[in-house]
Image 1: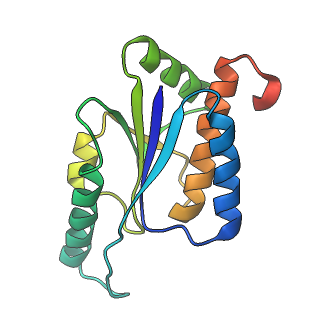
Image 2 (image 1 turned 90 degrees about the vertical axis):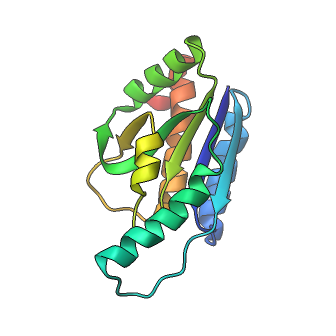
Length: 159
């Protein structure tokens, strides 16, 4: 199975890099895992609605250039469907069984995801109504993917 996370922007915080690297190492027993960064679009602090849409569209084009047709895509969105860790584990397992061995998760930039990215997604997933920095979300998502594999392996890790 191939798991990819596409993210907007560079990760600067050392502690987040270390946490992600640890879970990526653990995931290597279960899948090929990688994180793909695309550039964020520079924008002034105060944007009009039209300017916000334009920024999301530019970032969206960058994201979509990294998505292949065969990939099953999860878009992380506040209005997406919330899942338990067990639900996500079951979905990942089912996707593998039914021929979707390439799974991609997309984390947008600070303004969110473009309509084109949301349209391309096979499903939208939410980690709750909290607003989290997208850099921190990388670590949370990577851990949840690892947790999914541990649940599917019957490991007590997830409890």
